[in-house]
Amino acid sequence: MTGTVFGLLAFVTKRRAFGDAVVRSRSEFITNLGLTIINSILLVPLFVFPEGALRSAIGSPNVLATSWNSIPDPLIFAAAVLVFDFVVYWRHRLEHTRFFWPFHATHHADTAMHWLSVLRKHPVSKLLSVSVDIALLLLLGVPEWAIGLAGIVRGWWGFFIHADVPWTLGVFGHVLISPAAHRLHHIRDEALMGSNYGNTVTLWDKMFGTYVDPSQYLNCETGIAEGTRGLGGELLRPFEQRYWRRKREEETAEIEPAI
Image (tube, rainbow, N blue to C red; front, side):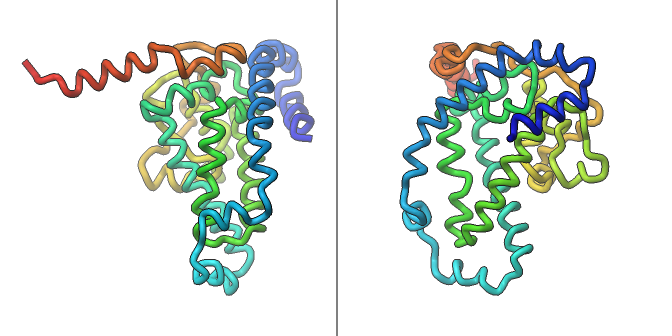
């Protein structure tokens, strides 16, 4: 279903260039598909938990859970989307720190952005997102229907903003993260990578000073200096010595006294 929708989107927007785009992204698409399958297998145990087990494990004061009963459903849903994206925003910023970057680098390695790029995640990064992203929603006692619906919206929007289209969404792009805004986050420029961390809304990027208008960077080159890898290379990427050697060198430089 998802592949069909975004495949048609690519065909309609690219037309004559569609074949070239398929060829250009084929090897990375295969890598992303492999990572998707591996991550799905590793996460299977999380789906056999009894219903409500995760909420029970995290715990939520009754006063918080019952407070949602007096709020209209549309407002509950809006709150769920905003809280969801707030956590995703900070989790994403965490992944750009020195410790987590070797794992998150896999997600940034695509040089031919396409809708499946959203699932190009190292298993450690995938586990982090699954463990963290809805924790605050559960802690606040948000109804499960709202969490589920917000998750569906976030998931589909994630596919959309990774699609290879230079859309800024016009006036709506001031409120919603657009494909152009997220492509800028994937730009092959480490300074500009530190922008547009949100998945769905621009609110948190604007509030915390990390939003950058993508209009000057449409169709920018994506990827990282270390280059893209095949499936095995991406799984092993975080354990390459140079990532950790660079981290140690930076830490040493910070504590060395000035001469």
